[in-house]
Structure formats: structure tokens, C-alpha cells
Image (cartoon, rainbow, N blue to C red; front, side, top):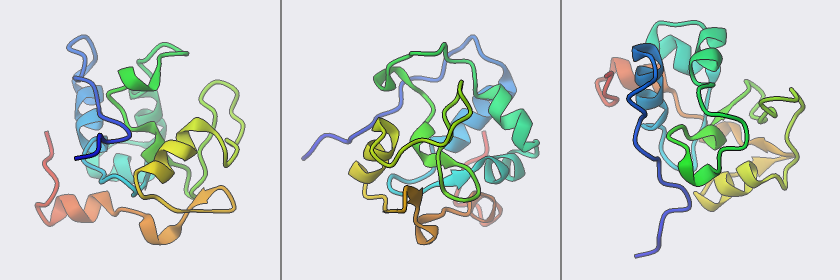
Length: 132
């Protein structure tokens, strides 16, 4: 069996309960699919800004292999990724987009294809997502 392109690390004990809940939700987004900050906020009963803030506990430059958060699956409403520190839109050939593609995702003009969007809140309401 082939190794997965990305495997989450353990959720750090040192982060807030809100951050732990959000990481747990984000980890349930299937490979090759994506959600928005709004999706995570709705499923967790938070705000999009609160989601971004709570999930920013990793120091800049932390290698992807050490991430508990699937950042390549959390995108802006338009399907694009945004550079965490610079606030710039990420290029289609950026490592995060390549990781998303390796998981079976699809990009159109550098943005995740709308058909791969995962409705996290609907899945939670239907009981198919575990709310920690």
C-alpha cells in the first residue's frame, strides 16, 4: 500500500481546547477535498477569524511533516490558499497545492475545484463528522 502524501501529527497538548476541537474537525476533511475557514467556523460554532487565530499555534517554518493541521485542505472561499505570514495568494506550483493534488484534489487556475468542496457543517449535522 502506498504511503499517504500527508499524515497528521498528534494534536499538541499545550494548545487551547478551542484549537484542539478545530484541529480535530480539520483532520476529518477527506484527502483531495477542501473546506473554508467559514466551514470550520460554522461546524465549530466559532468565527472565521477565530478559526485562523486558534489554528496559528505552529511556529512559522514548521515542516509539513510536523503539522497536525491539514493546511492544504483549508482554503479561502474562492478555493485559493493564502500565504500565512505574507497574506499573498499561493502559486499553483506551491508545495501545499502540490500536496493537495497528490491527495487526489483538483485545481482550476490555482484554485481548488468547487466540486471537491467538503460541506463540513452538513456532515456534522448528519452525524458523519465527530465533533470533539
